[in-house]
Image 1 (tube, helix red, strand yellow):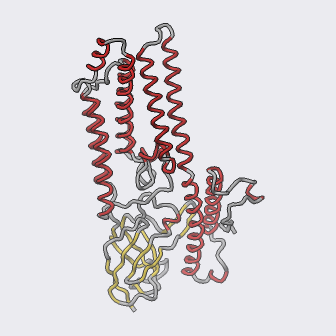
Image 2 (tube, helix red, strand yellow):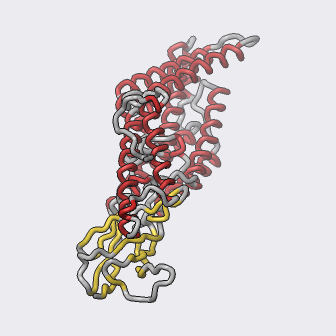
Image 3 (tube, helix red, strand yellow):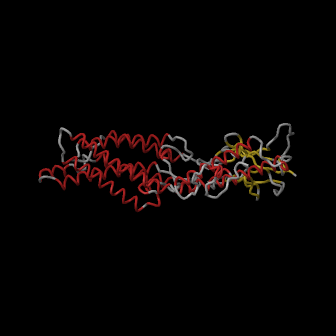
Length: 425
């Protein structure tokens, strides 16, 4: 049956000889791909009504629970393969980040060489190229020190294993300012005389460089505030956070669920535009820190306020709005009794990032003192249960008749407030 794939890492003839050792990046990716294909095949088979043992076919509840358990086991294997793939990310990211940085230095060298034709090589060209090489050396050394956390990308990764938008913007401005300062420092070292040095030092004045310093302050402040705001709301239970398997570039423009985020996207795009303007100004006159019009600083500040406001209002606790007896077609109206299915309606039962099968299987409903795992109900292409707004679970026979409190515990560990129902004999 589909989904009965071996947990071992060796290649089999049916695998086409592909490596599934889980140790190298290729093997980890291949193992995760095959585990995903096996899980999808198993889910689609159950969704089509096939694969249930004949001995369970007479009991809809038993068949549903058996299917859910089988899917949960397959989802656990899929999660293990995904974690193995995520564990190879630091090595891959470290190498790619360093290559990208040095490719940028090479591109700058080629650009300087091409634009120097007919104009001659100047001290400014030497300074910008030397500053870029020094910065690349610093990034390479940092990548070596943080090789287990993703190299140069380590400062951008949050506690939830996603790339942080606010940190990425802050790091971009810190890098731009360092590059501008290093450019001036190299020119001071190569300065031909006192007059040239005085001219370079005048470019470090507070008034002409105030806009650049303001942008650096805005980016750094937003990064600190966003971290503190998110951490505080998670500890207070006002937002649900589910860790990701590994960081992705899309994290910079999307929410935890992978959906495009307006607040994140506008913050990145506005700062990217202002940063490009800054680098163009620096290229035009590398003898002073690039001055920024204050209208661009105000634009970036408004973008930062929008970003922080989005952080402040996003998320929320799961909430139960109502609980009703799940009625099959043809059933008579009746009160809730043990053995019946109940339908819990509300919001926030599947937090962003928890839509993967293994995390869906971790959703639990506490009925009185009994914890009931929410069964996975497959349909073509996904699951009908659980969903973000509706959960269906059976009332176990261990629940005593009378008033009973119902609570939902999500995959993020958040728990709803109690909702009281009446269970009849």
